[in-house]
Length: 334
Image (tube, rainbow, N blue to C red; front, side, top):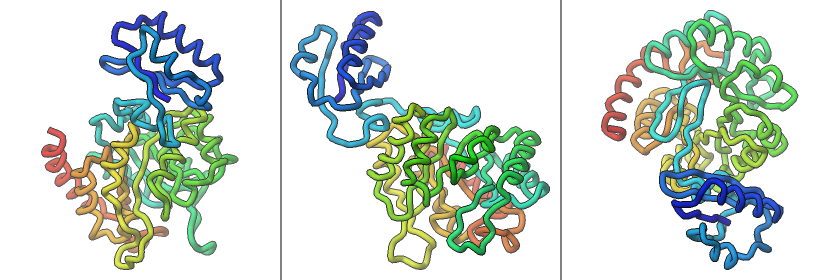
C-alpha cells in the first residue's frame, strides 16, 4: 500500500502518522520527493482501512500495490536511487564502467590490468576470487589470496573493487570489497540474499540464466527486506535456444526495469555474448538503451586466461571502447 502525503505536511504530522501505521504491524518506507512524501507500507495491509487513511487531512491519496516486490518498486520510491559503490555513484544519471579480469590470477596481472582500465576511464575494478564453474575440474579462483591481491590493486590505483561471494561463511573475507556481487547461479540462493540483506555492503545482483525480471526483482526484495537498500541490478544475458552467442542479451530489460524499479541497472555484455568481438557493440547499445553502467571483462593476455578468455577484451580494445562510449554518452546523456 502507498500513502502520498500533501506538500504542506509537517514533520511532526508525518512522524505521528508513521508511528500509528507501525502500530498496525506494517513496515513504513519513507520516500522524500521534490514535492510529495510517499509512505510505502510493507506487510499485511489488508486490515488497514483505506477510507480512513484517505480521510486524514495530510493525506493526498492511498492505493494498493499489486506487485509482490515492494521496496524496490518505483511506486514506493519514484525518484531514481543513486547507489554509492565505494565512493562511485551509480544511478540517477551517474554512469559507471566496471572493468577487470574474470579471475584474479597473479599480483602483476591484477595490478597491471587495474592501472590500464583506470587510465582508460573505468571507475571500478572487477575480479573474481571465488569462481562458480560448470565443471568441478576448472579453475575455481584463488579465494582469500585473490581478495588480498584485489586489495593490493585497490591500494595501488584507488579503484573500488567488485567481487563475487558464493557463501555467507566467507563474508569476513570481503571486508575490503566495496561491491559484493551475487552471480547468476546464486540469484535465487535466498539464504545468501537474506544474509547480505543484513550487511551494509553494496550488492550487485546478477539476473539468473533462466529467470524473469519479476524473479530478479523479487531477489532484490530479499536483500532490501533485510534492511540493505544498496542494490544494483545487473543484466548478463539469459539462456535461449540461440547457440551463436553464450547467452542472449536482453537489452529490453533496461527500460523495463527502470519503469518497474528505482534501482540502478548495469549490463554485462561479456557474459552475455561470450565473444570479445561482440562485446563493444553490445556495451555501446547498453549505454544507448539507458543503462546506468556496464561491466566488462578485460585481460592482459586473453589467450592464456585461466577463465573466460574468449570474452575478454585486451587493454587496448577496452581503451577503444571507452573512447566510443564517451561519444554515445554525450548523445544519450547530454
